[in-house]
Structures are given as C-alpha cells and as structure tokens.
Image (cartoon, rainbow, N blue to C red):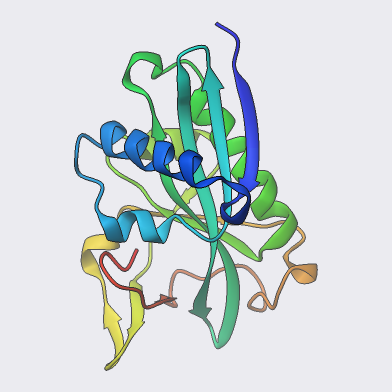
Length: 188
C-alpha cells in the first residue's frame, strides 16, 4: 500500500482536512481526545501520512516556552501523534516523527513531548530522552509542580541550539526544573 507524507501549517489545511484530522484523532485515541487536546495541536506544523484508505498517521509540533536555568527557551512541542489502528507498527509513527523532528531541529532550541506509556518506546528509540528532573508550569498563581508529568516527559536537545534560541549555558541540567508555559486543560 503506497503512502504519502505531507507537512503543512494549520493555516494551510482546509476546514474539511482539519475536520478529518480531528475525527481521525478521536478514533486513534479511542474517544479520549478532547477539545483542549485538539486545541493544543493547532497553530503549528502538521505531519500527515496518507495511504489508499485515507489518513494513516498524524502529529503536530507547536511552539511553547519553557524556563530552565534562568532562560526562556523556544520549544517545539509535539502534540496529537496518532496512527490508525489497522496500520500500527508499520513505520507510520516514525515517518510522522521524522518530519516533526526536522522542524524542531531547524526552528527550536529544544523538542519536548508528554508520552503515553504505549508511545514512550517509539520516542526513546528515536533518541528522545526521558527527562529525569522536575516538571512544572507557570500558572496564573505562579510556578506549579506537575508530578504526574514526571516520568513521561521526553526532551530532544537541538545540536545547533545556539542559533535557534537562548539555550542555557551548557547542557540541560535535570537538577533544575523545566517550567512550561500554562495552557488550559492538560498543561503538558
């Protein structure tokens, strides 16, 4: 079965395409993909894999900010990665991630994502690193620790980060927390 990979900004997807992606994600996540999850995946670059049956895989990367060691880093945050049930374990998730990683490498100081238990092995196999330190968010009332996100947040440092933003001096340091920007719903 032939497949095609397309990348496009949210603004370049027709309303019918966006509707199809949303329905696809509802199905891929077994009905556990809410309106806030959908909102989190919009406004960035989408990677879409199509086969003869239609949409087979999707993911998006959006811009977020994270505070680390006194610096505000521009982060390519991966959202809404899903593969149609009948074609899982056939490389579609890897194709989606390769396209998103290319965007991250070319545009951000850091890649980040929050993985499900099932998704974690895909990201680890692709060189994403499980963040061993504290995860927080800068909420309306200040910094809030997110212990439920610790152990499921992966990062991908960008080799050329010095030209992509203001990285912390030296490598990321798990002795210092990652403080993500606040958003409605699941913060990460």
